[in-house]
Length: 102
Image 1 (cartoon, helix red, strand yellow):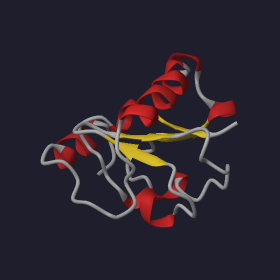
Image 2 (tube, rainbow, N blue to C red; image 1 turned 30 degrees about the horizontal axis):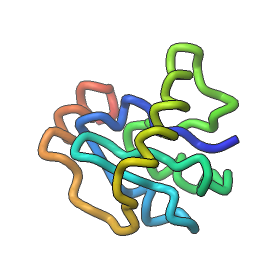
Image 3 (tube, rainbow, N blue to C red; image 1 turned 180 degrees about the horizontal axis):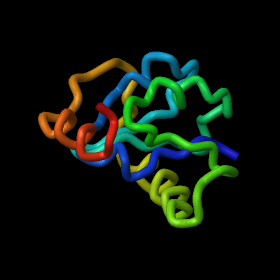
């Protein structure tokens, strides 16, 4: 099992989670982050750091988000590793508010 980034990250791309990750399991494209299930060590340190609650334990994913398991695995193979904090996307503040996170 691994942790999974879901669609709440889309158009946000906050990287607070990357700072606390003890391994290099985060990958990203221009829209969001993904977790490499081969690298994730299931520590869960990233979960409370996400300001839009986009990260779930794979075993606790709601049914409507299960597809993100495969999305993360596929995207992690084709996107660069993100190992340092980066600025969120310009759309992040509005997206965060739209999602109901202050």
